[in-house]
Image (cartoon, rainbow, N blue to C red; front, side, top):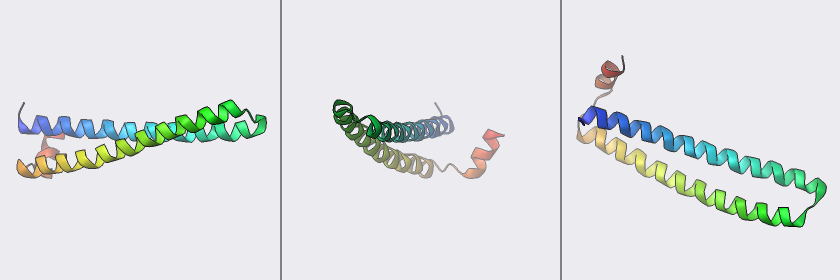
Length: 94
């Protein structure tokens, strides 16, 4: 795999990590919606379970965000190390 192909693959991975981040954020929002609805019915077991699920989802989001930051740095370093310019990428993407 040449350096441009590798860089394109790294960019794809970065987009997928961003998608993971968006998905986990959506899960957290959905948990909040269920918690709000549960206020009307006040099921204690559901409340306890939702808190546990929220804690896990929030931890996952933190891990995904850390991975995102780390991988952005790796992609940037790879681009710089291999002298990949934006003009080169525009030519390839056209």
